Amino acid sequence: MKPEEYPLLSDFLYEAIFIPEGMQKPDRTVIHQPELALYVENFGQADDICLVADVQGKPVGAIWSRIMNDYGHVDEETPYLAIALFEEYRNQGIGTVLMKAMLPRLKEAGYSQVSRKRRIKPI
Image 1 (spheres, rainbow, N blue to C red):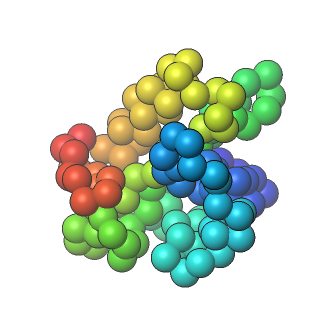
Image 2 (image 1 turned 60 degrees about the vertical axis):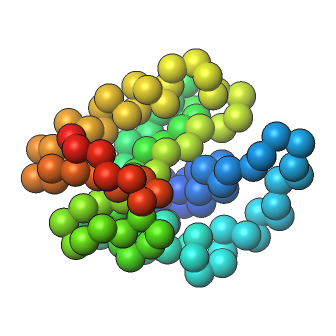
Image 3 (image 1 turned 30 degrees about the vertical axis):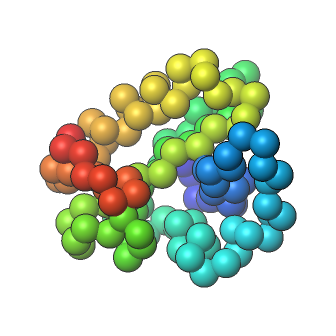
């Protein structure tokens, strides 16, 4: 992801919010709450990594990682991983492609594991 694309992370953060079937989506302002905003605020730090999926030149999904003190925080050497796709692009294998592209990037960056909602996955 290029620095000029970082504002897209707010869109993907909103898409990453789990909404149970039948429930109404929250107002978009929810992403500005401190517990959610930390996933994208000041993105672009040394340890931040993001890949974007494009379909016909349009960004449709993103996977990003960063070291942060959130619900999935393990330690200062384990990045948290987030992934989101716009609804109309889900269940098409795009998320799998993003994950398969991100894991080697994390390994190349020197990480041996990644956290996602308190689950630790070796890479």
